[in-house]
Length: 344
Image 1 (tube, rainbow, N blue to C red):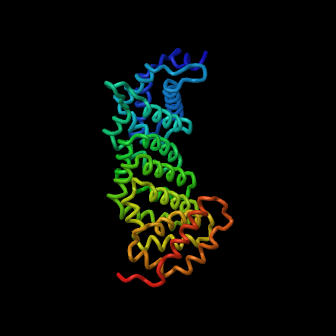
Image 2 (tube, rainbow, N blue to C red):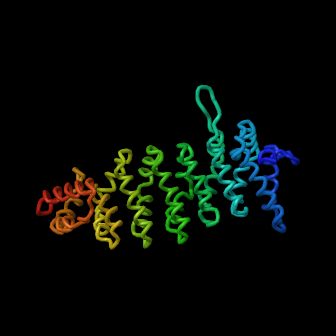
Image 3 (tube, rainbow, N blue to C red):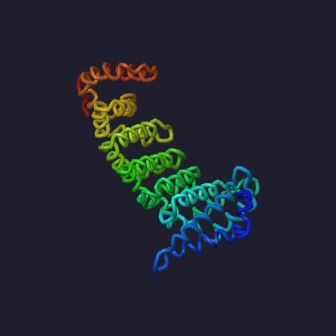
C-alpha cells in the first residue's frame, strides 16, 4: 500500500476530518486536568503528517490540488493557525517540523481573482495578527524558535505581512533574541530580522525613519555586543542598510552623528580582523559623504594624521581590487582635509 492510499485507506481521513481531529486534540491542551496522553500526542503527530502529505505528496504521488485547497479552506474556517502556533512547543519533534511545513505551504497557495491572484493565507493573517505576534514570541522557546523563524521568513516574502510584523508590539524583542545565549536561536533570529528589514525596501525605509531613535539605540547595543558573531553580522547589515538608495534619509541622519563616527573608528581597531573589515565599510560612508556636518568634519580633521597612518597599513594583505580602490579613495579624501578645525 503506497503512502497516499494509506491516507485514504481504512480510516478515510479526508481534509475536513483531519483538520477537525487536529483541532479537537489541540483544544484539549487548554482544558484543566491531566495533560493529553502519549497516545493522544502520537495521534496528533500522525494527523499532522497526513495533512503535510496532502499538501506535498510523496515520491510516488503528486499532491492533489483540490484536496490541498479543501484542506486550506478548512484550516481558515476552523481558525486552526492560532492553535497550531500557540501549542507548537507541546508537539513531538517531527510534528513541530510538520507544522512549519504545512504553514509555509499554505502561505504560498494562491487562487485566481479576476485578472490577478489572491493569497488566502496572507489575507487570513492580515486579519488575525496575533498569530504573527505569537510566532515572534516563539523565539523564547528554544525547541520551536527555528520553526517559527522558518514561518516568519516565509511571511516576509509578502509586503503586507512584513509591514504587520515590524509594527507588532513585540518586534523589538528581536534585539534580545539576536543576543540569545543559544547560538541556534540567535543565528536564526538574526536571519529573520535581516529578511524582515531588507526584503521590501519601502516598508523598511518607512519603519527605520519613523522609529529611528529606538532602532539605532537598540542597534548600538548589537554593535557593542560581547558576542563576536553578533557584532560582525550587525556591522555587515548596517553597511548594507546605509548603502541602499531606499534608505538615503536614514543614511544621512546616521552619518551626521558624531557618536556613530567615533564608534566606527573604535571598531576599526577591534582585535578581530573581520570586525575591522566590516567597520571599514561603514566608516567609508562618513568619509565619502560630500556634505559632512561641521562636527563630523572636525573629528576627522582632529584625527587626520592618525587616520592616514592607520589606513596606510590597514589590511595591506587584502588583494581584493574593490577594497584597495576604496581604501585609496578614503586616504585621498582624508589627506585633502584641512589641517585646522573648521569654525561653526
